[in-house]
Figure 1 (cartoon, one colour):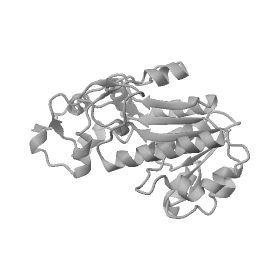
Figure 2 (figure 1 turned 135 degrees about the vertical axis):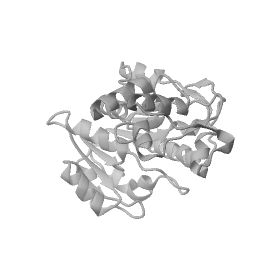
Figure 3 (figure 1 turned 45 degrees about the vertical axis):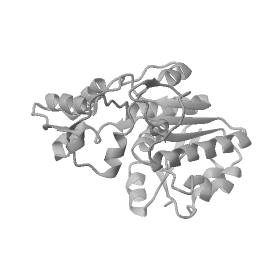
Figure 4 (figure 1 turned 90 degrees about the vertical axis):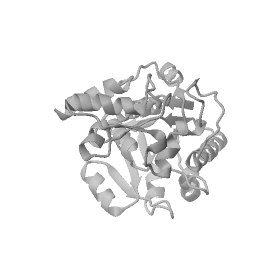
Amino acid sequence: MRVGFFGLGYSSEASAHLLRNGGETVSTWGTVRTPDKADRLQASGLETLVFNGTQPGPTVADALQSTSHVVISIAPDAEGDVVLRHHRADIDAMPNLQWLCYYSTVGVYGDFDGAWIDETAELVPRNLRSDFRVKAEEEWIAYAKARGVPLTILRLAGIYGPGRSSFDKLADGTARRVIKPGQVFNRIHVADIARVTKLAAEQRLDGVFNLADDEPASPQDLITYAAGKMGIEPPPEVPFERAEMSPMAKSFYRDNKRVSNKAIKTALGIEMLYPNYRAGLDAIWEARS
């Protein structure tokens, strides 16, 4: 198995490391936007190529020739998916393509007023970013069907993990407890994303799946819990109507839903490593101590 990642961000970097450490028969590579980041990741042991999303990556076509599995983790834009835009012909020419994976977002569902939903829910996104994701999903579904290869679409909940958690926000002073009554979000620990990606790649899983924790919760609950672990007072509560937030931050509060992860757990025969935010934050805290 040789796995190529378009976009070595937080989640895909964790997935690439886990796959690469899975045995001598697995190798990985991935793309980043800048030569500086390529050098940094190369030093960590990841084979890294440059692809900035505005033109084909100069060495990507050659890498695809020896690749069996492809994971796409680059956000689309108004014109669609940037990987298909610049590298469709190179993917067409892959002699041993066995599996595709696309990292999407639960934002494609939009707002369900706190109700539980699964993968059968209607897609009614509430912002342009999620609109773009829906279109990109459709592009990859059409491509995989035409090519005759399995495609896993993972709709990711809010991602957190080491270096990107409530502890970090409290430490750098950016944590806030914004109160919007009844508002809940699902989250997913980066280790669960890596594990599911690895298992799905090994099994060549086909289908659309939510990847979220078992217990959606109010955003302020995480800050309060993390502050308790740190032994500090949490920041004061701020009503949503009075909170100063960027338009992007506010857009997240337009969606209120509880996302079921039953389908991915059933498909892979697993439970989440971190089924709720408390388990995830406990592990992060223990690793920091």
